[in-house]
Length: 162
Image (cartoon, rainbow, N blue to C red; front, side):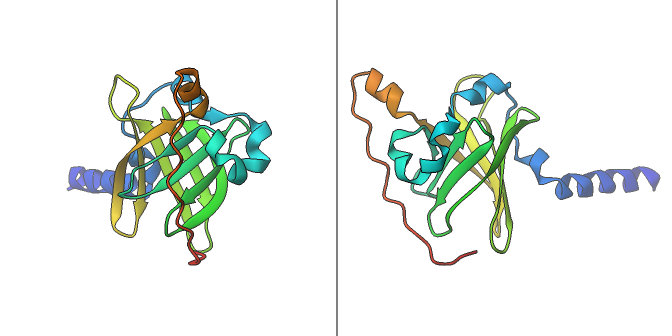
């Protein structure tokens, strides 16, 4: 009976600490530094988003995150809205939090596997755990390759204020 209680307690503790369950594969801080912009661009994040490094998902759950070296980030999530929050590297993942009007947003960006640069964003919403591929769009790297960066997909604003 004591062993069963310990197992059940362990599952409940895991369920109450979502940050741990959000991490797919751990990496060191250097892995995440490629996603980070200079804090000098922080005040103009919304207006300069096309020029900055942006972590973005596809059309299945459209999101854009712009991280800065001062530990802040700006985001655009279709049908939810825009905002800002704070981020840090914890337990081998980039953990970002932001306070919305009626809930606290928490997400983790981590490696999709032990090797390679593929990344996932994981978070909970009203439907449960979501795990979505997220890619870096770095206009400077694209230009250095002699290409023209594709425009960011048009952001769908929300008036929900949640």
